[in-house]
Length: 340
Image (tube, rainbow, N blue to C red; front, side, top):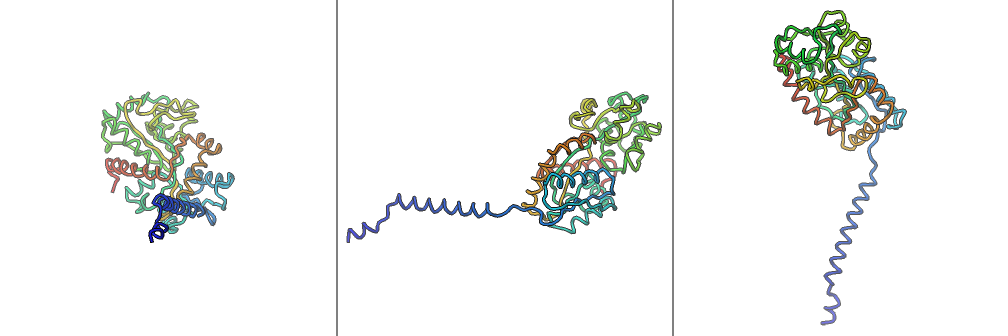
């Protein structure tokens, strides 16, 4: 009987080793099962949606995105640009969210996604969508005529501090946008009164610059692309750029507001969002696409020629940016009496 009991007795070291092997096998099987699952990728054509008409800045960005996705084989399925203008972007927002959960619908957008909700123009904002990428930033430039008595950014700050109503600004294309916010931030930083500002709104930046050249306003707040050629021709002097640091490229000589005594940052960034309800697998796919897209030489050249900065952020970083910007823009728009 003693021998029988000894024969059935298990060696504790062997038993522990067997359990360990079983555990490892289970992990390997699980990992193998996960790895064998194919990553998500588009199963049908992709729509790159724009909330403005053909020919706009956002439209040009969308068409470059679509071209690079196709030409560089970043997306294997066909893609197309779909313009949904109207309602200050509301029509495009409603359209993309009719396709909730789709990884095949992308919307090229700007800070108006946030400001339109803050001022009550739309009911949809970034929290109702899926942020995917920030792909470029166009900082606001402040310019005067070459013969203007305002010779520097510091002098403009002093004028605004002394009498905010003594300076007439022009901008495009609506109150509450990034250009208006830049002016409000500068006035606030100068210690002036934002409610006394004189601002003339035009439908396009070109018209706002024309008003400056004609002597109808003192300062224009605009993208660099609208004033660069005039500066080269000696007709315009660019006082400052509303960026954290000096820009690269042709406008690298323009000082920031921080260099002149005021911390003012305001920009028209380009972002891409998807509809609400996208899966993590879909988001990961687009993270990969846009990380590659912004590295393409064609993209870099286009960004530089448009005087944008190549400020790529992935989906998680873009959501954090929008969250921070929403809070800041709400504060600024309240100060000028536009926030609802």
